[in-house]
Length: 617
Image 1 (tube, rainbow, N blue to C red):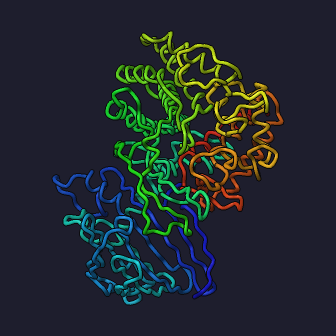
Image 2 (image 1 turned 135 degrees about the vertical axis):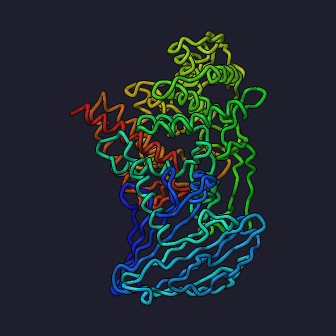
Image 3 (image 1 turned 120 degrees about the vertical axis):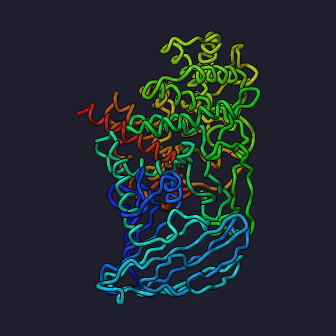
């Protein structure tokens, strides 16, 4: 019942989280981390490994430990420890067993509690790290079971009193027969914490960026690394699910999957920042999907699980109330079955950039590219980047990215002198798509004529701007900001500048920007099949910064605006430098967090803004 001040940060150049509780009578430090053991390392100093105990299984098990260490660094503190697991999204029952209810100093065993479900069993290990001078001064931890309403199994609670110099560590890990270390000791945890901090320092030291926003970029890169599944190289969109886009609303989605759409941005950022191993692994993951996941017609699914699976059914968990009563709570993602043809543009851009900045693509990859682009010649309207849940449309963003797909395919063929049997059709399709987007009138007969409405409305003469879709009427969509970023249009083209200037207006004046933050589109005008309100989009705001930066090469006023908007949105990150998908009118973060796309767009905007400022000096 003591009011305290809380401070939280990552330890320098690492993903070790430190939380400090401060009040008049004492200060406690909490440290949380997943171990990153050094390659070939043993469990602890002085321990021995037999020739039959391989290093890789040791590393794999240690990486799955969740470690929390607490130490009193001033005065004295009282802390409550509570563990209430909810297996299978709180749908499965479990049993709780207290193996060692009273944990005293000097106890040789660390296994204290086990939680057992039909498919999974977890154990809690506790170790008394040290007291001020001797064993007698170390604290004692006494756990007891407790049953709480709506929980399908018991949890455990403990109250601990620490004085300055006393410390306790907790490890949550799989309850398996043959651990790499039967008991967790202070020596083991000290070694793993040191190895983990060293790993992160060495990893981020590879970053090539040395500009104005280095601290912000390095934190974003380390967040992206945390979102990476190393066994396959997949990078998920976010580690959370059903965090609402509006408190109390129904826009609650599961982002724990890897989207093809992220590919070009991911590969570009990783390569330009100096992380070639991660770029290679991600490219291998995408290439593997070429071989295993395409339909007989040649289509590629829009998203995958971290292991490359495509069966991602969307389920509503009606027994859960949701974050701040925002329901339904969803797992899985119904958008997995959508047709979103913009992904082929992002995919081809990623492959082109990988060939340019990474490694030359292989013959097998090129054959897959040709088959994919030949399929793209037959495409129809889609659900596009925003994954609308009503009718398919000819979204301008998707058309731009289809232009990118053919453009990068043609460039790649020319650059590498690769055989391209359908070069003429690709070239014709690229040119027709460009004219569709840029004109307003009756389409000429074309390869894609069956997919186009009677009136082409990629650009509206009425409002002198690019719009959301051929069918949408005169409604803006901030996804058009991608156009100069993928070299579809020059950033100083009057049509694009008029569109960007209009997006910069507040919503009540026909724009999409409020408090320096950009909305996707006006949900009151554009029916996306979901309904409800949403916040401003972090990614779109960073795209606006980069578009302004590129326009600033021709008009300095845009560069100044870009710098101001960039600093403005940085102030909306949380205290750890993380960005979610959206930002509410109140300034709080909304949607799943941290979101990979937001941080990819942040890094790209900072990188290009830095270059733009240096060029103007």
